[in-house]
Length: 231
Image 1: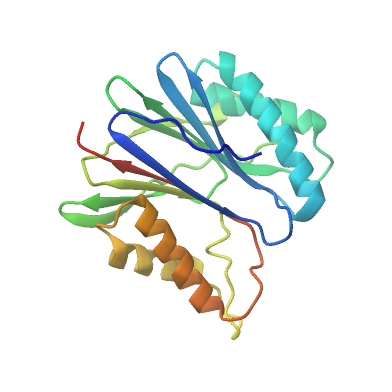
Image 2: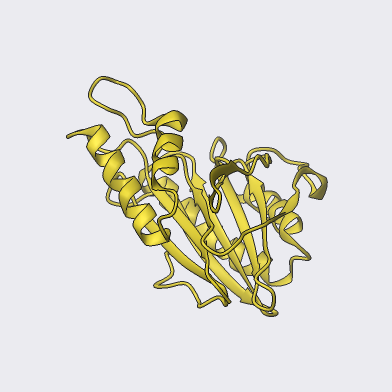
C-alpha cells in the first residue's frame, strides 16, 4: 500500500519510514497530486495484523477518491470520517493527519484527526516546537463534520524539519516496562535538532531500538519528515 517514493516538491525534501510490528500492520502513509499541490496522509489504524491492514486498504481507497475533490484538508477529513464510519467494523477507527504542500510557494498546511501532535525542529535558533492541533479520529463517531477539523499553516524556514509520526515510537517499551514516551522523544529530538530528515529518522529508530533492547516492537511505526531546503 505504501508509495514507492514521494514526488519531488520544490523547496522541501520528503523522507519516510515504515515498520510493522507483525508481518503486516495498520500504519500507513500515502499522497495524491492535485492542482500544483501534494497532499500527504499519515494514518494509524487501531489494532494490528490482518484486520488493521484491511482497514488500511479501505483508507487508501477513500483517501485517493475523496482527496481528488475535497475543498480543503478539513473537508477531506470530514468526508473520510463519514465514509470510514459507514464501512469500518464496529470498534475500529483510524488516527490520521494530512499535509498540503503548495508547489508554487512551498506553503505547508496541516490538519489532524487524532494523530500525536507533530513537531517542528527549528534550525536557527534551534528549538523544538509542537503543533497542538486536535481532531476526532476517523471512523470513531458519526456526525463529525467540517467544523470538527482545522487546517493550520506551518511556518518553516530553510533547515527546519516537520516530523509527523504515529504513536509507535512513543509506545516502544524497555525491558523494565518503561515506555519511550513523549519525554524520551522530546529529549532525542532536541539532541538531534539540525539533522536533516533521513538522518533524523534513522537516529530516532536506532535510539528506540536501543531503548527496547531485545523486546519485540509493540506497535507499528510510520514517520514522515519534511525538511525545508533553500528554493
